[in-house]
Length: 418
Image (tube, rainbow, N blue to C red; front, top):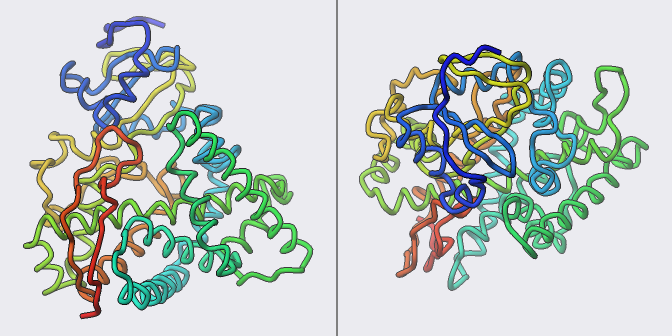
């Protein structure tokens, strides 16, 4: 392949430790130092290309240029995604499986989700009113576990709630952890998949009848391109790919509470015009605060872009956090300003907290609809339904730890209904 230009290159044998040390800012820092939205480095013992920005996202999500199958490290598959899930598929297989997920995102089903979310918040507030101290991150994970299971059609006994919450949380809290925490995540993945697999078998045998159209019902009976039911283990992976991301919304709920505290003028706007302003506020929380740092793919076939060669098989990372803080896309990106979304007509490759591009044909997360609806209901409770005190605590958060949450996990005291 003709070498058009020399891509900016980070010197050194391997920079995996730098990625761990710098976390969410690793790619963005180098994009700034190289004055380039694309550069070459070495990660996990191999050549890697890192890229960010709107145009980079457009190329990265072009299925003719990049593949996802077999890209995610085993430690991530064994904890976060599961083996064989929709995130690892390409082309027709991906589109077919993605249609299944998108069928769960109809307006009626999202209305059911909002009703369930309100009910679970009501139940939680009833408990909090007689509780001396509420650790919001831990409590919101439990709320979300209940929401996830009820909405998905997966029965959850009261005595199981805390343990299932811990197991599902471990899947997104452990992917880059080292040692015991990582192995805890792998163990939790096995336990959760066995639990779900048993339910899938019962559904297929007619011994369990989840709500028609629920995730458990839909995925249990989904047929692949060949007209065959998914393997039980693979179907379990996909049901967990509904449950686990819903519990992970606890991260965003904590950042929403942090924004309400840090920006009292924004809280006032939510109080005066919640219906009009909540969507803007939620989107800005998702843009501003760290969630997913990056996504990975491999070059499908040799191609050139911006005068640079991309060789087949090269690991490529797209900077999600950095693209959401890109000065070429966003005006003053380091300022928390929900109004920026009032007249926002940006590209689906500009605002990419959970991936970019088209929901159905591309790899953008179908769960964005679930995320925003749950966040809006949760925000309403934090702003308009309850009042509380925030005692002195460490509300800072790390840009290195992944996932990042406020260090104190946000402690609330004297919770009362308004």
